[in-house]
Amino acid sequence: MANVFFSAIELMRSMGVFDFFVPFILVFTIIYGVLEKTEVFGKKRHDINSMIALSMALMFAITGWAVRATQNFLPWVGLLAIVIISFLMLTAMFWPKLSDLQSNKAIKYGGVITVLIIFILVILYYTGLLNTLFSTAASASAETVTEAIAVIITLALFIGGIAIVVFSKESSSGGTNE
Image (tube, rainbow, N blue to C red):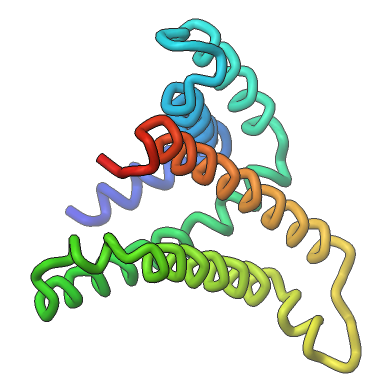
């Protein structure tokens, strides 16, 4: 039975579903969601938001290095998300009132900074730049550096989008979270 699923995944891979369609849908969804949440072009402007998201997602999906960087980066994001959710579940077992913990701004922003540092270290490790930074003989190839720069730019855009959503929510609701 499992062989059927592997065959189906291999068929989708050979058709290019993971090289074009999945990155396209992912980028479209993220950009559309950020535009809808921030209401940059006005309230209820689904038409403009969808056209911008469509254009950006198409440009992203046809850019080979961006898709490869995303394909290399997202498994690490998934792994990190599993670790964070597991940590939160274990914390909730021993600290039942997580709302007390969330109300402390120092802990809240400290957690965000910690996650960002972990993201950056994982990217640097995965791309080989961490070894390059700490080794005496810098032997990174041009392709490795280019991929690392692509991943860092993608991460910066992703974090920027999240920051826009988070800070626009705080400023529009008077500084309190709903």
